[in-house]
Image 1 (tube, rainbow, N blue to C red):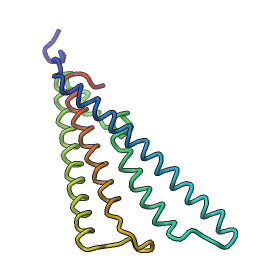
Image 2: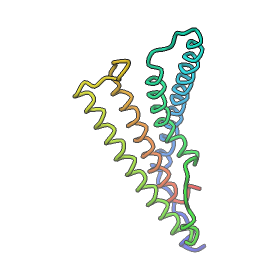
Image 3: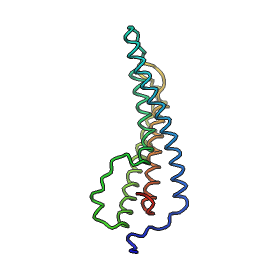
Image 4: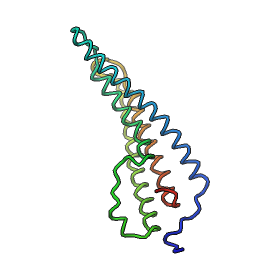
Length: 173
């Protein structure tokens, strides 16, 4: 067997990290589903009530906030199930070992990007607390939703690290 294609044994922490990320991603996916059902229920109820010339106040905000959280909470689950776009045409020219290393580097760079996103969104949430900013029509604090989005980005970064490590050790696909 060529050393360029032979995967090395993965440390136990890679499997443990992968299991932890899987559980966390699944939990967030369930919560994303709850947000989706909530958004659909609010939108549908608003449409029905508008026929009687009554509407739900702040429907756009409720659906928008729900959409932001459901998107952020579904990122890691989608990564785990390879639902994001991946362009690997350049990597096909290399041997299996080189591809593993390149996949690891790509996943690490992506994880770094989403970690930076999580930090910046988290900083925005802190800023919202400090300024006392409220949702425009409902007049409620919405920083918890901003922190939820930051958490979704953080979990995606963790999923990318786990997938990168699996790729490095030849356990990924």
